Length: 505
Image 1 (tube, rainbow, N blue to C red):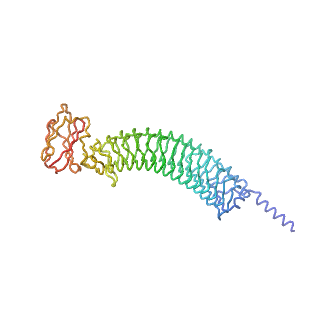
Image 2: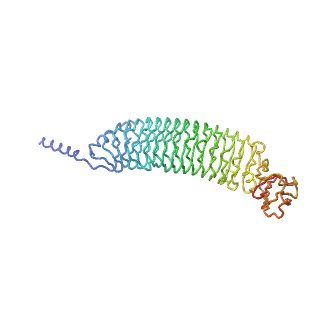
Image 3: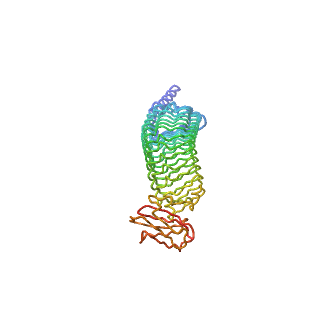
């Protein structure tokens, strides 16, 4: 009888493990024992619909994934919060993840090469806070559209190299990897549907690759990579749909790799790049549909590479660029859709390049800023350029000009007679000046087809248009009702503008 009972027990036990259980839709592994028993319980299980999570229930409980060798297809893969997991060996046969892959907060994880043969990830690939992971190399078999790749906060990561078969990517973010020094690869990626971001990689010194990249739908950002000296690749990048943002890359010396960049859909930001001397490489850039913001670049001396920009869709802000002597490079900008704010540029002495901007396009939509402010530029003595003289005539505009050199230290100091264009002083005589009641204008031009005259006080609080002129050659204007003070008279003669200051007693 005892023998019979023993035989029955053995048969039951054998039968229990001889017939594989149905492959579950979702598995949570919390212990090493559960992982070790997986091929025994599910010997034919290669596909798990919703995926697996590997998260130990007690510190040090999970040490390896060797028994997961049969798994080929998953919904999601989550490997997180494991203190003794050294590698991902056991997942070498994993081919596709149709959802997301999260590898995060594994304090002992040293290498992840076992999943290098992955061909497909459907959504997010997130590698986060694995403090002993030294490199991420490979993944050249990944060929999937719309991958969202984030590699963040891996404190000992030094190298990222690979991903050379990705073509269209949703987004790439590589940030806060304190010891990361090298990024290379991504050589077939031609389109990024959202953002490409490199930020707070404090020891990153070189980026190469991205040689096929042509289009970024949203923004490109390089921020607070304090040791970054060089960027190569990006030679075919033509269009950025949102911001071009370079901030606090203290050792970056050039932007020459962006030689094909033509269009920026929002703001152009060059901020606190202390070793950047010029903007060479941006000569093909022709349109910015937002702000030009150049701020706190200590050794920047040359922005002439912006010469092909003919209009922008936002503000011009040139602030605290210590060595910048002129705004040459902005010469072809004929219209903006925002304010102009030029302040605290220690060596700036020439702003002639902004003289072609239509004054009607200079407008602030921010209550903090004036339509035009030029201030605290100690070398700037000449502000009588056409766009500024034109905007001084528009009473609705808000303007602040102060604390520059003599000649541009206030609105009153700007002598707009120097801003005349194609008109000789001998053609027009204005007298008396100062005057109390009448102002006489004599015009010796013979072929006068059209003449318009307007008067505005120096603070633009009084405006006197005189558009109907009967006697073109001898004009008398009654100014008796104007308040005493400084005024500017503008004479539009055959389409050419002449400006003259006079005093009303």
